[in-house]
Image (cartoon, rainbow, N blue to C red; front, side, top):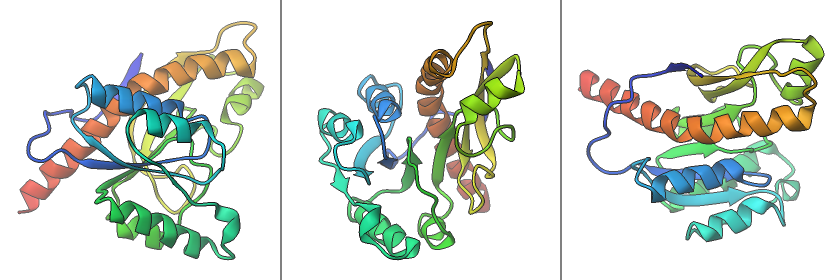
Length: 211
């Protein structure tokens, strides 16, 4: 069930160049790459950055034809230095939009400003409910009947940026975190490519009106 999705006009002009940040298995990275390959998302996957050696996202990036950059966060004393290294890797590939797909790191103001607010994240709850880690477990502990996933613009405060799109997922009797997570991930894979297209279209419309 789609709860909200911004105006998803056809994107015109050059295809937006995406850079994906991933720390884990990379299932949303795979969904984005698949949508691009199928012509469902008119964009170019220009870069993938992973901060965890051996993460599944590395293999998914290579399957999509992109050699990922491995930048280990443990090698930096300050978050700002790590952010700068990631931003440099993305800019070197001409990235215009940054898409977090299971990126388990917070980013600071300098990183967000480097991409002019064009940074998106997906979170496994209907924000503003259940922010932060273990969102699925939080939903189960709260006993809610409906949870879901949210694509939002990234802000300095965790899971607090403007919402781009949401999809609802029912909590079934007897659900545990694993079962609910699997259904939420299926919703994420359908929602994220559409939300990226909507965000790009809205940004281009705003730029056109301002011009």
